[in-house]
Image 1 (cartoon, rainbow, N blue to C red):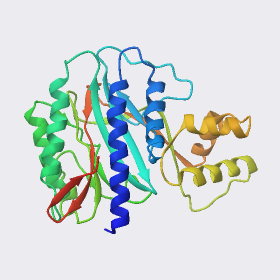
Image 2: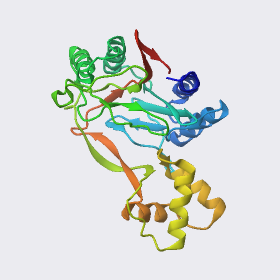
Image 3: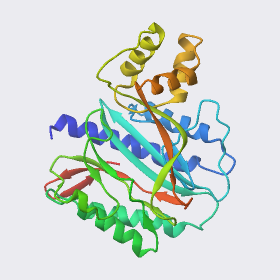
Length: 304
């Protein structure tokens, strides 16, 4: 890895870490979820990085892919199990990190601890040449030791410039289908154990208010307004995810168009991907812990 790229990964990681720790302190009973994501995203920008994706706040049985809308009134409640997932990038080199916070309760302390230990054990087992299925086995067995299930259809992932999911998945259990796929020197990878007291599988729920531009082979948009908007979104966010509330704010400054209408239209025609919330199949509570690492000859370096 070139020194310049390494330093950008490191800088993004340090900023993401600061934003994560800042956000943890804001998650309290009665606080507006929208206020927290705005504060955390503002922290990333203030520190000099850009947003790799909208800050995700996933509560209780929601495992991932939720961020509030621009006018959302959702507040944190006592007993909520809150996953705070934060992403920052420097010139497209990404840091992705997450933490779970339980509000005014310790009922799910062991569930949270299982993901922390699973992450620690997984990172300790990483070096060039190790198969991703072996890392998944470490994660799954650690979580199982606590009496919980790892979530089978959520994974960690390799990172590349402006690409959040770059092709290699890090499972949360031993997945024989991934046998033979090995980690390599200089890879940047997000490792993110998910644990649940449910069955260990997520399904799609309601809209998560998160979108990403796609690259269809053919571009048939004849409506000049829609064509203008997809070009604007691609220029602004490239291949990285973005939030409805970001687009709403930008759109309100440029025109009187309705953001929901435009996003629904572009998604329906296949020009953007709409992410749904991912919910534990049996409504089990979900905890997550995540770090980004860079793989060196002698092991893994945590950037976040």
